[in-house]
Length: 99
Length: 509
Image 1 (tube, chains in turn green, yellow):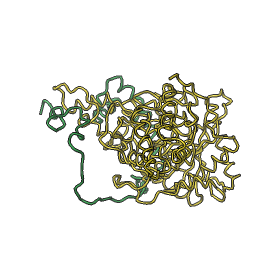
Image 2 (cartoon, rainbow over the protein chains, first blue to last red; image 1 turned 90 degrees about the vertical axis):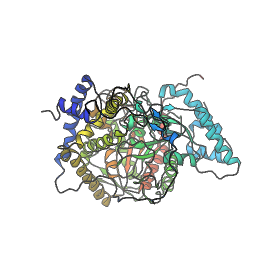
Image 3 (cartoon, one colour; image 1 turned 30 degrees about the vertical axis):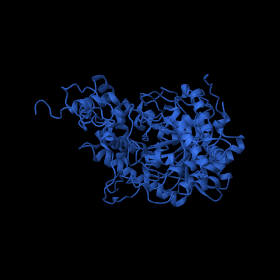
Image 4 (tube, rainbow over the protein chains, first blue to last red; image 1 turned 60 degrees about the vertical axis):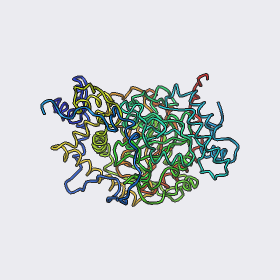
């Protein structure tokens, strides 16, 4: 029995915003199936009454004072941008043709 | 070759402070070593000679002006390429960030500079710190100075290789599932994962935020402690940073005494799947601790066997969320922006081209574990296992002061052996992951060379690491035990383990 199907892997790639080729999907499907089967072992020991731990140490929210502080100037903020225009990030169209 | 590259960080800082050597001389010696051997080792992704010398000159000027320098001023360091540096490219080993110049320094970077450390360059790593060999670096693997056909461990394998090859006496790393301790173990040096939150994550390119922990590499336990102290401590820029004093790690490294200390041998971290040569050195190290006056008992941590599967759900889940920021919009690579494609198409094309195979695997695995319908069965269960592992540690530390295990199940494996076998690669972190899930500090110190196995000698003559784990914020204990083991073994060996490594051929300059 497989833990994950090839179709599910293709769906995951879409959710993950990864435009993967057919060969890559085939290869990943087999590997993910193996990994998911192995990590499913966590289900053997985790009973319902055990609280989850999301973090190594107990933490509560940390607040800082709400005061104005210097931030990155625009030229630095845009310094690594693939494309910039008029002091803004230039991005491809965000709506699809059908919209 | 200059003798300066064989000295410890503490010795080098002493020479600079006393004026017996200038920081520039020390930097030059290390730059020459990098030029001579890094063609073979490939520890560095970026070295800018002029910038290195300028940093060293600044240290010399501070000294000339009468300033009292810190205990590591003028000492060169290899800086893992996961820490942002405003004056050097920062790639995290990924094509998606190739050539990126961050607009700011990580807190660890800023503290290295303030302490007068001279950043030699950026060290190679597995892409986004995902891996145990550096084979996942988009810029080619680093090599183990003990045997250039083998991996130096990972993800901080450029850091371990640089220190083991005498290219730098110190290096930074990050440890999410073992990425400092495992490379330290397989290259015969010292590596420490501090208590989670003891060192700042600000400016560390995120992999798994609840686990990522910056820490030191060095050739001696004392040097590691000095570096640990130099960059650790509370950082208001990191919301998970612990607001408490840095544990007295330097004092502990100098104390190097285990008399009366209760040492627990973790029953579950040995046995099947462990290389016999590793287990032999490990058992000797445990006997050594006993002979030094420690009280050794066996301790059971029944859920440690579930740490690896829990980690490979938790870390990929956090990674799938963290790496969503690489969207081809604000920085990094952009592919296929031809005026016809939508932002989403460009994003998916860019990520498919910019990320390597392991990063894609983990993003998809995390996306799966977090998706509705699977969340409870995978991510939720893994978080419950995390609780069980924390409880195992808590119960153990009621009986003993520290826990010990081998750092890795095997010695350094050949480059290519596990490259396309993710489950085999993941096993390299079998012993190190529990400490990450619980946030506790842990060290790896060299404890000898594995003898060739009767089966055919695979992995013989290569370094083995002893792992020591302590409770949260008891980082000093791992240094205390590590230094005691180091001292006793060096007395026995007549010098450090690394002295047994073959000399690398130096390229003509």
